[in-house]
Length: 423
Image 1 (cartoon, rainbow, N blue to C red):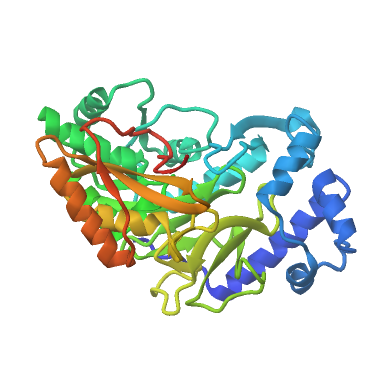
Image 2 (tube, rainbow, N blue to C red):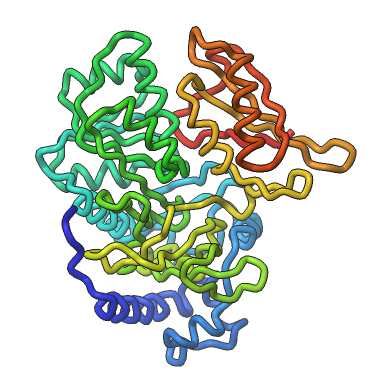
């Protein structure tokens, strides 16, 4: 993996410079942030880094949703006149009300620059042929990744509007070397190739995002089996915050945040105090270059852990285990904390499992969880369900009913999968 040339000192200097420029740009121009500065009693002249961390309030998604309802259709987080905005995106709405997001040309360029660096860090260059296995929609998704790869000089192939078989055949015929997909859909493509006797393309890199599976060892093992020879690279970002991180291909347990573009904090979700390295907390981000619609001290809801012994050669913040879960996804089942990633890490141990889904329902005032398991064609679904039930009990010290469903029953979306269903 190409080395990062930054040091911690240079990163901090760059962050300080960009933060000061951001505050100057939004003060008096962006109604949403001007109001928050005034409410905190802050001015751009006095809000240095220390003051920013001590007194600038956190920002939540609920605030953004309320602001867009109060100032439809795009909210008041706009630094410039509407005529300067040329890009529209919308969040997937998987965790609630969708957010609409506008970007200026310069903000979009900033996001492309982040992706160019990610691609460089993991060894993708102009000789690669990049295939995007999804249909482009308002969700930010891989829009910026696709454009950044073209910026690097890669041959970029869009895969929208095609069946899984047609996508595989196009990838094979075009000699694709890099695949962009969610972990769920990458698994679906690999399984389709096996079922229909299509030779999988010889990939160099499999770039996955949109779900936490790329940092779950059991899911990575399945991807490695289905796509032999491909290095799996995880990434995370958010429509409203931008593309944030890339996976260390030499040490895949670590996800690095691009700190020349973001100020990252990890806080206790209950007390809002910083947590020490090695402790799990909520990731808070300030994007430093999306000046047209920035986010400052944004509570992402992602649970992470800063590495106590980060890998050498990369100065950017290393998250041990990547995104561990979301603060709003954890549920308490009969007194036991249960996370989606914990269920997936167990479920993916079974090669005969094609797909799974978790159903949550309230029974007599208590939350109960049921897992639906879909077997591979020809596998014994009842036997699989029983074994998965036993494995979940051993791993979580909890009896979780597992119900077998027929092959082909559960959905395999191109973008974010919804395996955590509240009934």
